[in-house]
Length: 623
Image 1 (cartoon, helix red, strand yellow):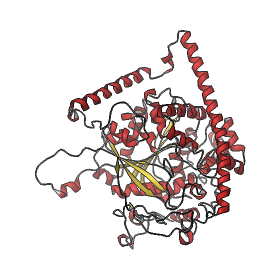
Image 2: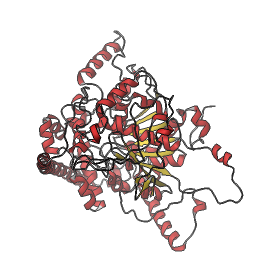
Image 3: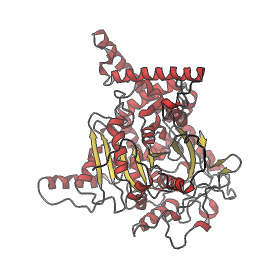
Image 4: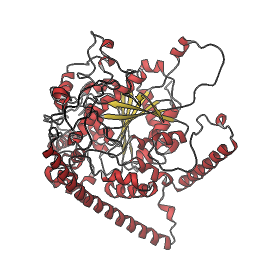
């Protein structure tokens, strides 16, 4: 794997940083606060809970102007998130948690933790011990339920087999699954033959594999990229509140053929480029979810089609990192989805634009990746981010809750008060024991167990997946998330209770009643409850029709009935038979989703970018 902007001796590199001398004095800043990633400034550690040096980096002042008066709302949100003195008040001390002053009913105040002391450290240790035991009881109950469900399904399958029904009749794409297994076996043999005979087959394949053989089931996106002839380089991105995010860049490692003679620098500058696309993952996943299906992975498909693909990971992820805080400090975990949207997403978008030199990018999100984007783009959050997105492609959009939130274990998490929730699940990471199991357990056992547990919790099946790759798919989940994030999704105050990410249940009920009156011909739909302003980018939706976790149809109805006059819906598709993860992992996902995403990205690309970019393979233009 190629590591970019990292120096083993100095930390994050200063070579890409833009300091004060690069600022343009007559240009208004794109964001009202500075997002910096890359360079290093030395700061003393103010107390035992903070680490030094504090790393900052390049700025967003030159990325574009403030769009309109609504940027003041974004500035106010950022100030509330970070405090009046920024993410490190005083002399770089995190005296309070972020978002303490948020008044939005969907974003209640987060707990506040002061600098660590002996007493607070003991208190936090006790909470961690208690939550460790209680969360293990909860996790054990879930695993037991998953095993019972799996055993029941196995008994039913045995009965069907005894009755003369073939086991594969329940597999919708059984023949395709077998065909792919045969192709993987052949590819493994070709790889072994190539290594033994040193046969150069690159001329037969534009992207010859750089890895092959039996899949070792590793949590390594770069490895699976090399299996399909690509590679991945890693960037580190710092948020305004000091978290270090991991950003992956998928690329073709092969350069142009060797030639003799002089080059033309002017022609090189005129060479067509690739339009940047940022992919954002779902809850408890990393961006590796976009890379687990060989050539049918959405990330690899878009990359080979001709897009410049970037894979963003939210804070903490596989390896929690912060410029000043340690993992044992509860201040490192005092965040939820609002911080992901308002702080993580702008930092990732800014880094991609900085690296590529484009004014805009295409954004593709799945599940929670769509939720954080819809939150960030709201007119009372950080709407100016929309000026940097050419289109937002939402896969299985998580805006309205589905019926699964009424299951007994989710109801349990919803009815317990916040203090009891924190006693069960702690004030740090959500059940971090899962990540320990991930590191210790054999990957095949872990992948199988992970599927059974997630299937039990969220009600999806692998009926449309390639079972030969299923264990690989679950190597990238779960990841570290804060207990506060899970409380936002499943607790008694926010999403699971309100059934929406940006409106209370009372508001959504009033809107539903108004829609019924309009359907009967009485009155018109009012747009005074619109979430988005004129900076909202075009939106495309791919909705899983059999998704019980979220209700994408309600979002589609909202956008189609005039409640969001500033939202341009450029594409909408409901795939009736799809479940929540099928938009990524179904064997026909490229046909149903990937090809249309590729087309929508091209159709919404700014004209200036089209003149700079080569047309991706497979797209068509109207004559």
